[in-house]
Image (cartoon, rainbow, N blue to C red; front, side, top):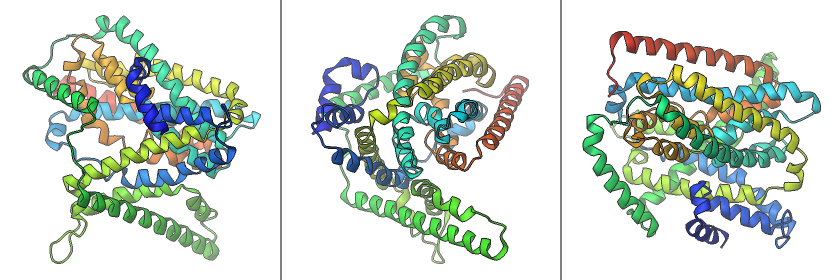
Length: 464
C-alpha cells in the first residue's frame, strides 16, 4: 500500500520527479513517518522487524546483480578504447577520492569514539546512492552500529540535493566557457532522431505502465534458480574458506584471525564474488561433451528476468531500509555527519574543477565530467539531466563512452566489492593502512590518465 501511494505521489507531484526522489524512497518515508520515529501509527516491533530485512534482501540483490547485466559491446569499446580507459580511470579516482576524504575525516575525529564505519558513508551514499546506502544498513547491523546505516541513507539524500543544486549552477555557469562545440559527431546526427523517437515511445510506455516486455515464467524460474545457486555457493565458500584458515592457524599460527575476518564479511559480499565467478563459468566452461551446463544464465530471457527480479528486490531493500531507521539514534550523530557531508561536497568540486579536465578526454571533458558529477552525488540519471542542460550535450559522445566504461567500475565501487570490503577492514583497525593504499592507487590512476592523454595527443587515437 505504501509503495502504491508512493507511486501516486511521484506521478502527481513534480517536485519528487524533478529531484529524482523515486517511489521506493517515498514509500519508505511514508512508513518511517507512520512508525515510532513519526506519528506512531506503527509499533516499534514493526520497525524492528522491518529493520532486519535489508540483510536478507542484500544477499538476494547481490546474488543476481551481475547475472542481470547484459554483455557489453566489445567492438564499440575497442573503437573508443583510449577514451573508455580515461573514463574508467576517472570513476575509480573519483570513488577512491571520496573514500579517502572519509578516512581522513575519521582519523582526525576518531578520538571522539565514533565508529570506523563513518569513514565510508560518503562513497556509499554519494557514489553508491540509495541502493548501496540501504545495503550499508545490513553491514552496520552486523557490526553493531545501525546508526551509521541510517546516516548512510541521509548521506544519499544530501548527495542528491547537493548534486542537483550545485550541478545545475555549474552546467549553466561554466558550459559556455568549457564546452568546445555543441555539434554532434556525424553518426550521432544521423541517429539522433531515431534515439529521440525511441526514447519518446519508451517514456510513453512507462507512463502507461507498459514496459513492452512480458514476464517469461520459464526464464523467471531459471533466473531464480541461478540466484539461489549463487547464494548457496557463497555460503559454502565463506564457511569453507574460514574453516580452512582456522585449521591453518591452529597448525602454524600464521593466519591469526583470518578465519574470523572471513566470517565477518557480509554474505552478500561473497554472493557478489560468486556471481562473478558463476557468470564467468557460464561464459567459458564446458564439460567433456562440449555442453555448458550453466549456459542458460547467459540467455537474453534469463538476463531480462534477473534484471526484473533485481529491480523488485532493490526497491524493497530501499523501502525497508528507510522504514527501519531510528531517527533518534541517528540524530545523536548529526554534528559528525555534517562534517562528513561538508567534506563530501568539497571533494566533488575539487574532483570536477581540478581533476576532470586533466583526466578526461580533452574534446569533451566538461560533458563527461558533468555526468560523473551527477553520478558522484547520487545517481547517473542526475548526471544525464545535467548533461541535457548543456547546449548540444545530449548529442555528445560522452554518454556513449560513459556507458561503455561502466563495466570497469560498476562491480567494484559505488556499492560493489571494494565498497563493502573496506568497511570490514576499517572495523579491524586498518583505516590508516587503507588511506595509504588508496592514495597510492589514486596517484597511479592519475599518472595512467596523464600518460594515455599524452599518447592520444601524440598519435591521434580516434575518438569516435
